[in-house]
Image (tube, rainbow, N blue to C red):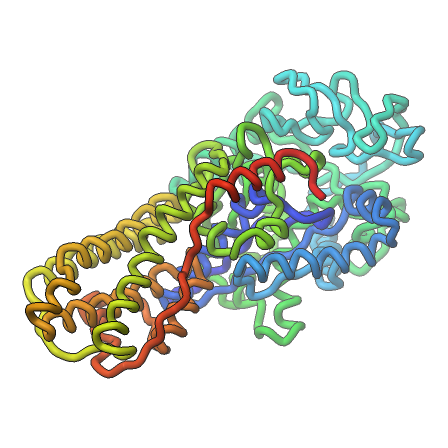
Length: 570
């Protein structure tokens, strides 16, 4: 039994996320966690809400609530939506937790002792209109590198180049739009990432199996221009983790908080502490400390490409720089962007489908299947309503749903609601088992390699085999000539339904539960031996005919949804 630590990039607290956010981290992470559990491995799957920084303050202000109250409420909202999508987190924590506060301050103290933090008096942008210093991401302007007009003061989303606010052309406040900005002096702590550059490069050089997307972004930050830059890790804000040197006050840093990008990844570790403190698990250190048993853990992170620099460089610099035996990530699965219907998802414009709206329209498995089978692995992909309709109707309804319906209804009509006895399998059944075995082994290989689109295609091909068998065997015709042989064909097909439930559970978990309940089967073990797995449901085993597993999306529904989600959320 292997041990898998899995983390998804933690979603920001300021509002409900759209489908692009879901498919870029949480959903594929859940797929991998469910698969590893199904194979009998020990899994700790962690996520949290990212609650600090200016966006949280501004969102709370717009909602007319104290920021702590707003964050607590939105954490519950996001946790509820995650449950709605079947995201199987072992714990869904909060970066504002006492555990994360203490651990962040601990790391800062260790980095200070290692000579990796220095105080820097710098010039920072102050907005007179907003009466506040503007964090980097709340200054917008034109990127000096690529000319993108909505570049942020920390990074250009278009070309991913790391920026400082003073690099921007025609800067403005992203809060008010005001150009009435001035530069004032303030003192902050900087993590001396430049001193860690060679060590980080050597570590990344060992990751020859990582996606090109991940390593190319990391190397760009390491080597572009003057190379990896030192990074400010504190901010002039009210909301956040107070700056301390471990348990001690930090002279000169009174009233300042740690930068959200410093404390947010540390929450991955703190989340495991929260998991224990919530009574859900024990001994978090065996997952995170290599001197306490984490040496045999495989740690996989899932994230969108915009998060890669912080997880390949800044967070590892924090862990390595601490000099303590923390577990480093083994594999980073990064994703490109999912675009929406000829443009981009836009939270600010309400363009696209948001997670709560999606669940109001259709059950979670419809979305899970389409998103995972179109995940933007090697390039950006696009959600269109036509593609979504086609994926649901042709894959889920016509292939998987139709097979389950035909088999169970035919059995009920001819043999009753129990697995029929009689007949002996022959060459056709042996060939089916051989084909199934080959395809299941291919499916497993894609899942192990986190080749998600290929895994989805392999799973669909397994579903197709059952339909092809049904067409060739034609038990409805066999029944007229040889009732016992038809019984054998239907017995095999009923076992195929159980097999499909097991294999499909990482993709469509609610559907799997419906299948399990209809078949009244507690044995949902992985089919290491395919032939044996097709004999689990023996003669006389009772079942019920499930309701239609999937309803088809009509053209009228598609057109209505396309119009409804073209612009304004409401």
